[in-house]
Image 1 (cartoon, rainbow over the protein chains, first blue to last red):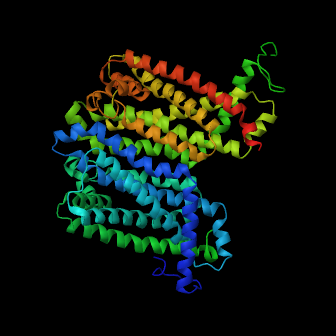
Image 2: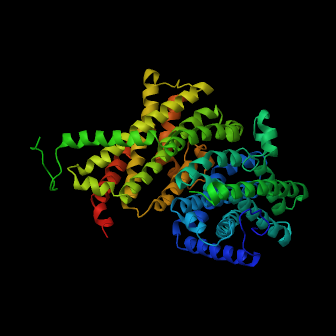
Image 3: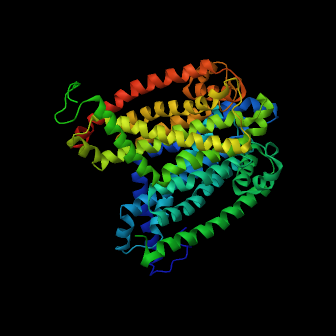
Length: 269
Length: 274
C-alpha cells in the first residue's frame, strides 16, 4: 500500500520501506494483543449490535417479508468495520499525543510507514470483528448461499472497506492528535452513514424525500454488495459500485493522510 | 459544625453540611470543565438528538405500523434516556483521568470530604441530565411531541424527573466502575452493556417483539421502566407502576453503587501509589 502512495520526502529504498512498515505493523499488533479491552471490543461490538437489532426487530421485519437473519449481517459487519477504522483514529491520535510521531521523525523512516504499520493491525482487528459478526449471525440463521468464492469475496470486501476508511480515520487522527476528540468527531457521521442506509431497513421503510440518499450512499451500496455476495443475488453491480467508492475514497484519504504527515515540516506536533 | 463527626479521617471535615457544600464546589468544578469539553457536549446532546432523528427515520414507519401511534412517543423517551445515561460514561472516563493525573490524590491530601467527590459528581450529572432532557423536550416539541396523557400539569415535571432519576442511578454505576477501573479502556465493557440496554428495553420496541422468555426481564430493566413511564405521560398509558420501578431502581442503584464508588474513591490513592 505504501509502495504506491505518493511520498514527497526523501524516501528510502522500497525494500526497506516494506520492512519498516512490517516492523511497525508488528508493533501495532503487539500493542493490540496486550490490549484485552480493544480485542474484546472488536469481538463484542458486532455481537451486541447484531443481537440488539435482530431480537427486537425480527418479528416486525418478518411482517414486512424480510428475513432479518439474512438482511442484517452485512450492516453489522460494515458497522464493525467502521468501529475498527474509528479506533484506528484513536490509536494514531494517541501516538501523536504521546510523541511517538515526533520520535518517528527523528528516525530514518519512510513517511507513510507508520500508517502502513497501523493498517496492519487494523487488518487483524477487521478480520477478528468480521469473524465475530459472521459467527453470531450464523448462530441466528445467516448462511452464505453463493458458495465459497462469494463468501471469500464477502470477507475481502468487508476488510477492504475497513482498511480504506481506516486510512481516512488515520488522517483524521493525525490532524486532531487527541484520541478523545477523534472518538466524538466520528460518532455522529458513522451513525448517519450506517443508520440511513439500506442495512437495517429496506429503502421502502424510509420517507420518500430521503430515499435517493439512502439508496446511493456508499454504506448502502456496500451492504447491498455484501448481501448479494452472501445470498447469491447478482452481485456485479453493487460490488463494482462499492469498489469504485472505495478506490476513490482511498485516493482521497491517502492524499489527506500524506498531507497530514507532511504538515509542519514532516509530521504532526 | 463538629458535633456530627462520625467516621475516621485525619483532617477531613466530617459534617454533613460540609460534605454537601463541598459537593456543590465539586459539581461547579465539573460543570465548568464539561462546558469547555466538546466530547461531553457531543455525547450528551448531539449524538442522542441524531439518534432520535435517525431512529424516527429508519424505524418510524416500521414501528408505527406494528405498534400503532406516533413513533415520537416511543423514541423521544428512549433518546432522552440514552442521552442522560450514555453521557455518564464520559464522566466516568474523566474520573479515571483525575485519578491518573493525581487530582484525587491531591484531594486526599486536602481537607476534602471523601463522599463530596461522589455527591458533587452526582449533582453535576443531575444538572447535565436536566439540560439534556430539556433540550430533548424542546426538540420533541418542535417535531410535534406533546405530553398530553392523564397526568395534566404534573406531566412535564414527571417527564423530566424520570431521566434525572435514572441519570443519577447510572452515574452511580459508572462512578462505581470508574473508581475501581484500571484505565479508561476498562469502561468499554460498560459502554457495551449500555449499548445492549439501548436495544433491550420497551422504549426501543414493544415488549411483544422480544422472545417470550426475555419479556419479563426486558420489561423490568431500568430503561424500560423509564421509557414506559415517559411514554405513559405522553400518550396516556400506565404511569404509576413504571414510575415506581424507576424509583426503586434509582434508590437501589444509588445506594449500592454509591457505596462501592465511595469505597473505591477512598482507596484510590492506595491503588495508585505504587
